[in-house]
Amino acid sequence: MIHFLPSYDTEAPGCLEGVKNIVRVHERLQAPATFFIVARLLEEKKSEYQALLKDNPLFEIACHTYTHMPLVDTPRFGKAGTPDRYHRELVESKKLLEDTFETPVVGFRTPVGAPDGLRGKEEALSVLRQAGYTYISSAAWGPDFSLPAPLRSPFTYAEEGYPELWEIPVCGWHENLLKGHNVKQPILLLLFPVQMPEAVPQDYVRTPEEEFRYNSKPFIDLAVREQVPEVNFAWHPWSLTILDPNMRMVEMTINYARENELRLSTFSELRAALQTRPNG
Ligand SMILES: [Zn+2]
Image (cartoon, rainbow, N blue to C red; front, side):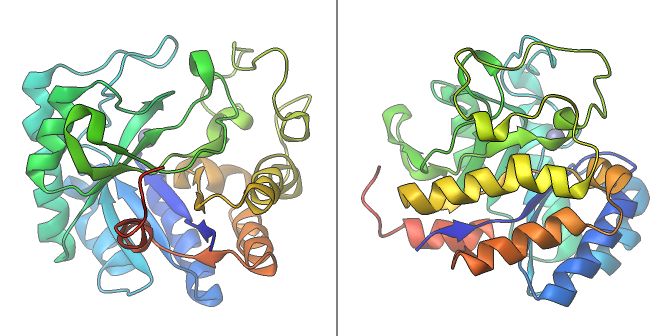
């Protein structure tokens, strides 16, 4: 069984419009989704997000820190926040999400991410585990902060002492970079030799069809060939809705996953299935 986990890093003011469009397509297709939300957005738009996401059995609410603070230094996308901020960013954020949506929050996605997720980041892992998270999603780059991120199987942080804390990696492109939405000049992202030529366009993608062709389809095809447990992408409501307010790429990807007999799930549904799996 291969799971496809549609997920949305909800992190900027422009996300509200994007989430409206995303909710519409997910309800029409009866497709589950996980929303990793920056808690600060709720200070101003709490009732709007409640109206869109609260009490909908299709949707899981998860955490994307309080202010979009990275946990790992990245060469081109910012420095990690310091541990004195962990309580607010990892714990208070979770509480605010739980109070707002009246649901437990067990998942965390690290802003920006890192090639190996939070491997070796004992202090952050300890706070996350104590806060009650059961999975994190932070492995979101290839070697040396390259894209697209390779397709990888989930793993646990047993090496750091947290065997019950799972990493659910992200594959493919950070779609905002694939479109040039927040970095307008050429930047160093590709590995040589190219690992997946079918996933590498010559220029920014300009249409939903191109995004499906270069990002969604190659990774779903690879997941089917390799029979990995899950596929999920770094999708952002603010960026998706600039290129594609009707969410046609999302719809194409969901339909293609279903045609290939992937099971659409939330992250916590996959996490529950991993409980019984041997660590891989
Ligand atoms: Zn983010």
